[in-house]
Length: 105
Image 1 (cartoon, one colour):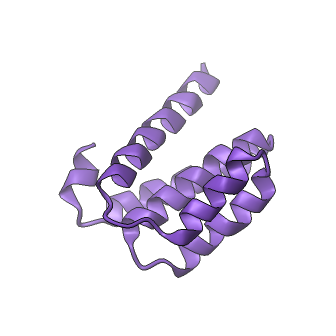
Image 2: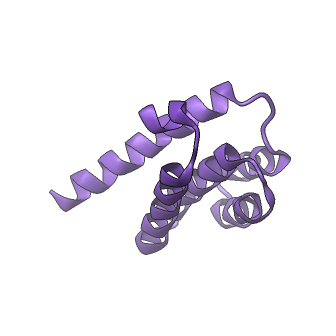
């Protein structure tokens, strides 16, 4: 049952990431670069790039997406604790966000 809740959380964050990505006018180059690594199965490289997003990008929506993508990549690497930590960071940013649309999702 605990795993079901974990996967449900990942699903919710993924939905937030998709909605956020679709409404963003311009995505961070790092998000795109990380996605290219991810799509090639280079999860560790993708994580490193997405870590730059959360450190350097001023756009809170991109940072939330960056944490979400990290969580998914960590899960693919079997690093569930790191995946959970990335999800927690995304939730914290979401709670601190002034974006009412993101909070409603």
